Length: 325
Image (cartoon, rainbow, N blue to C red):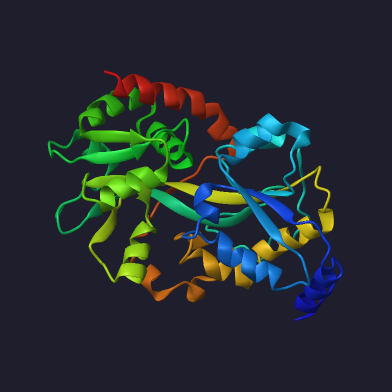
């Protein structure tokens, strides 16, 4: 309660004439289907006149291009596969927050990049069409089944990058050969997740690279239980999405308040059914009931930012070489 009163009082001090807080976010986040609009409304309701303005697109490339001239106050939607490059710009500052509210399945101590949601990469399929899904990445690669699959390009998509890092961890030096075996099943490689998932829901492919939580959307929004995530024995790639405050923000106090709001229950309660992923700071007991129906991996494969940066180029090269054979 004390925190809530302090939070509201501080925001009120910004007044009705404050400039909008500019937040760089991925397209999906700020779209009418994403969590952005509801988060904007919830945050703005806590103050008198403060306003969020989303600028959407590829967040990190835009920040790198703009450099210290960027008008961004906060960025949201980075992940640990790219934070090394982001950190090395020197453009982000510590969030200064107590991380004890986090409910991630692993310890998170980063003082700059703040988690707001997390999940596991997975291949999602229609369980009315595929009765015996692969139970391992190796089985997916080596199966004689003529499954058709849509994936995302690791050079333009965070989920695509997660896929090649996942494959690199599972197959190691044999990754290129594994991608070559999988290539005949890959119908298309899309620039982003939305295009690939649209092909899946349109019935153009049997499987799509997505997340173990994707079926929750179909269960909750469509009362459809025909979509499932295949669980692999080798484990699933763990992804955590992050936000950070820009050092050059001209609204440092409002940026701080938004960063703190990320850990607030009002923000976190919007994640599960708007971003269709696990909230980063909300106990499991407060997740939607439908999340209990989801497949949950027994093993997480996680690379910290140094490990991801070190593996990135080699993993992409192996993927490109394998698919071109």
